[in-house]
Amino acid sequence: MASGSKSVASILLALNLVLYFIVLVIASWAVNHGIQRSGETASVLSIPARIFPIYFPMGNMTTGFFVILSLIAGVVGFTTSLTGLNNIFQWDAPNLHAAAMSSLTTWALTLLAMGFACKEIELGWTDSNLRTLETITIIVSATQLLCTGVIHVGISEVVPPRIGRV
Image (tube, rainbow, N blue to C red; front, side, top):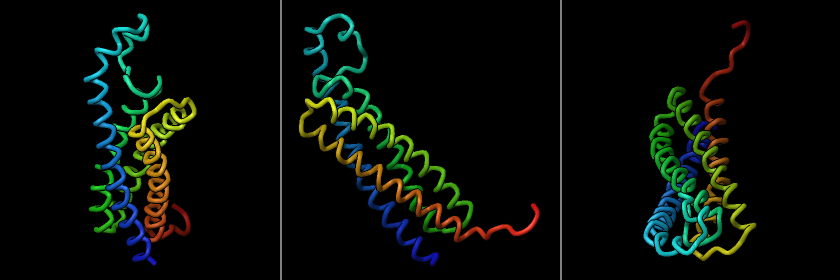
């Protein structure tokens, strides 16, 4: 059974590596686009919105928070998937514990980004690039949950249960 968990975890980590790379690319584009165009569009806004540091000329008022959190989740998720693949290939208790903790941290960051994606979908007025980022963020939060669960199952297979007094 250990090889089954190992192969499923490897497949999910490879899938997450690709999905987090896509999130990273789209969020980086959105930050670059926001930096280039915010000067010309923010000048016509009223004072509170003009001095708001996370203003994006596209989308709605949650776009700035969503894009920044997606960028952070993409960087952490991509790095976690790379190191997780290394930890899974070694398949011993210390490496699986490290993979489980980093996977859980990445899932928490991805859930924060997913929350803002859901809020942005609720408010509407987003273009196709942001809708793609929203969709992939929601999908990667589900695959990251599955990956975290499989890694924790792998830990229970590798580490024997303690019987008796500790």
